[in-house]
Amino acid sequence: MVSSNASVDLNSSSSSIINFVGAAMGEIDPAFIQDPGHRPRLAVIEAESIPLIDLSPAISASNSVDSRAIEKLAREIGDACSEWGFFQVTNHGVSLDCRRKLESAARRFFDQDLEEKRKVRRNEVSVLGYFDAENTKNVRDWKEVFDVAVQEPTVVPVSSDPMDDRVVEWFNRWPEYPPELREACKEYGREVGKLAYKMLELIALSLGLAANSLNIHFEDHQTTFMRLNHYPPCPSPDLALGVGRHKDGGALTVLAQDDVGGLEVRKKSDGEWIRVKPTPGAFIINVGDIVQVWSNDKYESVEHRVMVNSEKDRFSIPFFLNPAHYTVVKPLDELLDENNCPKFKSYNWGKFMTHRKDSTFKKQNVENIQTHHFRVQE
Image (cartoon, rainbow, N blue to C red; front, side, top):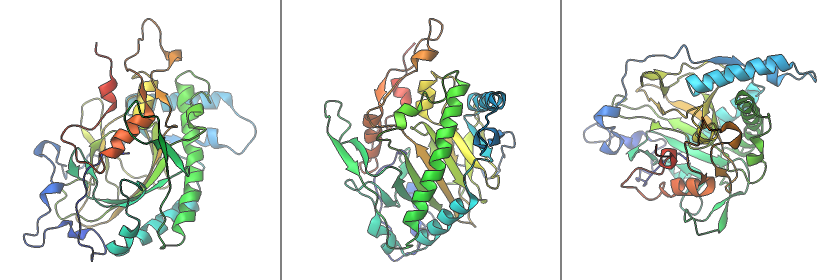
């Protein structure tokens, strides 16, 4: 999960998180204020050039497969992964009705009084459900979330101790209201899961591998989860962020964002923050740290963040495709030779993920564990 730290209590009578704003001064709590070097700029540079890829050759209902069209599509995706680490996809096979049902249910859940939402608030024992006090890079995010595991139960290590081989099962926590949220999440997870696996196959092909060569890591005990994000209006969008700068630790992310927008990507070529303009009906795909390691840096997991604004709520739904807890992440042997030596040491995904999870409830005085900590020193 995204690096997060200690919780901060909110006014339990609030129906939203507008009480992030200090009543006396009309200013936001200092916990939300980004360091000067990382504050958002209100002047927006929109990323018209982020690739928009038509997946219809790979999603066709026809039994006939045009191998040349698939090869062309894989090359296009490979170029997008290499140049940007982010791209958008259309004709992806996920029904608009499925997406709309979950978006509607999410809005109804977040519209409730805080007291109701906190009935399914996550904690160190039950790590799935509602949360309203996440931190990224030790600065509080201007958002509230609801986390759902795609596979139930999700099996993970008890601790990040490499000598501790115990595992624990995570179960979803469902609110009483809205009653349709549970089924909407499950349906969405099934449909977007198919898209995520298709993207994984196309990425494998783009690396010169067999289409199903990466799927083995997700067949049993995958740790994939999805998140419902709500970003309320913020009185100081020049000081706070919905989510601070970060990279996704898993394999890849499939994101649905509403028409308000706010996602910004750090451009690899010059480090400029670029706004990803919402494309109706499209999904945003981004490479995670695991794919970067697998590809031995051919594809890079790119920093991104979320802007907020003073007028509108924003909603998004990221789907984080993560492998089984026992997966050993390392550069793929098929991509290595005497001219391309491993750039990362191997690490256990479950231990890595558990270490990140622990920081949700224990504020860190140092940077949370990152993939770059496993980089081979040259």
